[in-house]
Image (cartoon, rainbow, N blue to C red; front, top):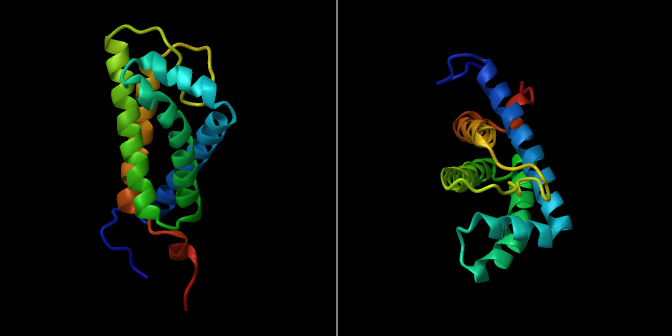
Length: 151
């Protein structure tokens, strides 16, 4: 079988590895936030980007969304949709970090549950890298069936 539209046969394998890594990141982040929703709500509140009524709603909803995105990425079911949601989430996270860094806020990221470390520009680089991985996965991933040998 000849690969089409790929400069190298390693692209589908790299996309699979990116998809699995993203899935693990989202699963871990979501579970940490589900365990301590109150601490996550405080982290969201500290960004000062949302009205008060939305903080608790997001603190409960976002971790479950992350777990569902993780499930889609890891299993490959709805892989493109999960990759798209992953990219959109990292874009939103990066935007929130950027605004907060420019405003000079000294707050915890809240990315992986409760953390005492203050946000910095490296967090933005991390989110940018994960955004790039999500976009690459969106376009290059061929799913698990690609790697199953067919006669």
